[in-house]
Length: 290
Image (cartoon, rainbow, N blue to C red; front, side):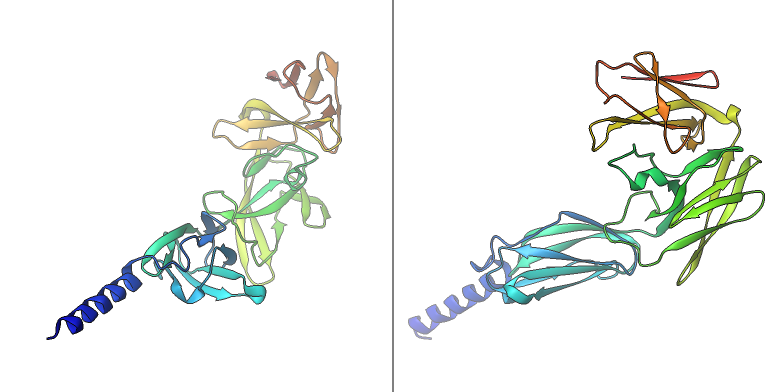
């Protein structure tokens, strides 16, 4: 074989290897706009991909049993990566420029878990957030709503496609319904099943109603609202960490009794700070800030 032929074959082989395993100059700076993603089976999210020069040099790789994905060029020349949850699990969706990984997104797919949360969480600029599932004090009512979250309590990065209306059975009474908010009350303590009726399916959760003696301690949460005032929330907490609404608490700021608003456990007062002493009292229990 002539030397120039042998040299040409070596050149072609090296070029081929570079195309498969190297990093072509076209997209070394390609990046996905997110680092992680939480989906439920069937949920999809479209993410922008920046730094793309030659789309044909890019591809994606993941565990296809957990997610599916697609790269496409949008109008205006922008590139997007759409990832859809297929089954419960986790995987990395790698963005490859030729054969080299230039970026990746960690994706988890979890089952949907539904629970009753505090309605005040829908207004984070006005009221402090009460974490997770909540219960009620026996004989007291509170505005609640159905929270659609992952089975471990985290919020999905994609809205759930269905909406659910809770249906309560005796002894729980539904005092009022305001849009997607409901106001149940039970004259008895216990754990009561709740049907969650959606447009496409029906699920279930539970309403926990406790006696005053079931509350282990009380907590104060505070924020500065959008008007610059203090907004406070006093909840009971059971020994297993469940927050309870409906307490007839008293709250003082520097010894001055604060007015409650929209519920016995919600208060307005001075903006929370290190120099303002806030004290809550209920049923012989107390809590303070700071």
